[in-house]
Length: 295
Length: 295
Ligand SMILES: NC(=O)C1=CN([C@@H]2O[C@H](COP(=O)(O)OP(=O)(O)OC[C@H]3O[C@@H](n4cnc5c(N)ncnc54)[C@H](OP(=O)(O)O)[C@@H]3O)[C@@H](O)[C@H]2O)C=CC1
Ligand SMILES: NC(=O)C1=CN([C@@H]2O[C@H](COP(=O)(O)OP(=O)(O)OC[C@H]3O[C@@H](n4cnc5c(N)ncnc54)[C@H](OP(=O)(O)O)[C@@H]3O)[C@@H](O)[C@H]2O)C=CC1
Image (cartoon, rainbow over all chains, first blue to last red; front, side, top):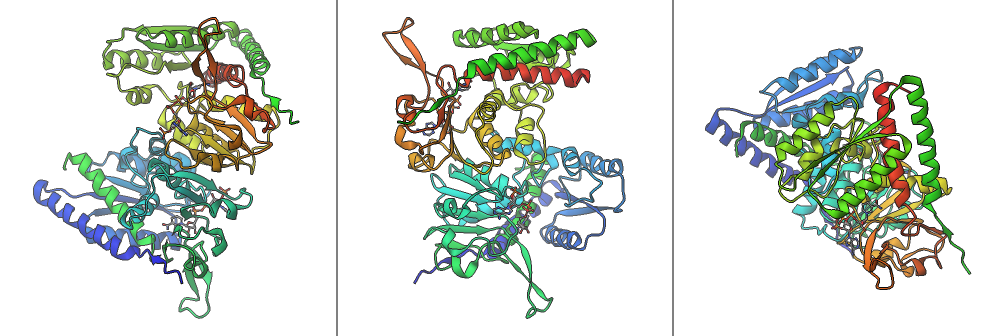
């Protein structure tokens, strides 16, 4: 039978974090400075707090200083913009991320545009996205999820150049920048979305499939070309009475079917997720190096 | 046999220009102002001068004021940037375009970034490109060639929503923004480029094919799905001793083969070309309206 490689992100994430911690140590020793990350949280969403805590803990472990600005759910746009502007000007802050989603009354796109492109470690500023899209240009930052996706492909020796890729989903956070990045690596990219007819047909032609939809088991075994490589970005909570919390996390891809067909696949959880967080650390370190002129 | 619709851009371009001229007349009457376009030309390239003259003449015809800054081939970057900055600040200028290509010693990408995004009627500023790429955002301007391409599709009643598109070529000027724009219209888009293997295979699945490569007769009849719609952006000079100037203009698509297969196609010349110029006028008018708060 087929034996698919399971793309385990955890050891890779650990290795990247280890390297980052070493670099930060070297920076401290050489110039007495360290990178700083500022987090902006509006409101009290529990899931947002969980995500932030994971990121903050990862920062501390490698030596990135963190500061968090918490604003009340009902804060005004100008209060929020003031906080962002202060971080923009603070030389000890090298990365700023605004935890999404924001409450309805705040204009997310407007606020993302106020984050300095030079501190936009999430890579969502339209200037960074434009520079990612345009050949011959370089964004200050590549968004973390796409960067993690490509990192896994490269580490596992997956050829991207000249290969057919299908990206399912086109969100600003994941699908769009992954498609742009795969194209930068000279893959032939097709983007599938909610209005695509017969998505299984085009997907089954791809050497590389990336899914970022949010629907468990959307991608079935017969969607996949034998030998394809699958990166499952989906992080979906499904009910599971047998588990301790009553639910478990699953991806977009029907894993049991896929492993019989593909040559390699990321499990959910444990595939791309851990690598994404290490990419945030990497972007913050890069930014601090640029700010300090440290190489 | 098959009777393909020939997508004639000339009457459409005329109609658009007629409408623009009317709008400008209305603007002059109402507020005593008219739109202004500034052109920056470095060096003496004959083809660049020809292109600029076509654009300037089109401007004059509809009532757009024009100003042209000509710099010597060996001008410095800072001289060029000064000229651009002056136009950025000039309230009578609503659109700025820098004629490409620039001489080798000038950093094209850097200069394009200095053009104010609010006057970037070519739509090449990375901020505008990023805003074109990101769902839910709006660029100040959509580049003229892609805008012309979509205009033709819409005018000829070609359904884009949910249809498969293949864009051959991914230049910043044409291929990339067309792919982004087709995706905005909810087409399922694949981008083919010079490293794509078997480009004919993926192209033959497309309902809409846009070519922007620069190779005459690259796209042959057997690349095309019966009934597809083809927009040929290629503008290639080929030798032709029988013609007056010794050459003629041809597209990327083998027209004689294609018309036997497709449901509609743009001829070269005369297809999308004339519409592209009217889009420059349209972008300049839009910009002036925005600047004057005129609706
Ligand atoms: N691993 C990570 O760190 C991250 C994981 N995620 C996960 O990725 C998933 C998507 O999240 P997010 O990007 O925020 O979601 P969005 O809702 O922003 O995007 C979902 C995308 O999927 C497309 N889509 C919806 N239904 C279908 C369908 N039936 N077939 C094909 N495409 C479809 C949508 O298309 P359309 O544009 O037409 O609406 C949209 O582009 C979630 O599981 C989320 O948890 C998200 C962020 C980071
Ligand atoms: N109608 C108009 O107003 C305009 C017309 N044009 C015309 O469009 C054409 C392209 O010009 P431009 O965009 O400036 O050119 P570029 O050289 O910038 O782009 C050409 C594109 O074609 C791709 N390509 C090259 N060879 C092949 C191949 N064999 N198969 C598939 N793709 C290939 C390249 O791929 P890769 O990225 O891998 O190198 C590149 O993306 C020309 O004919 C030009 O005259 C251009 C601008 C405006």
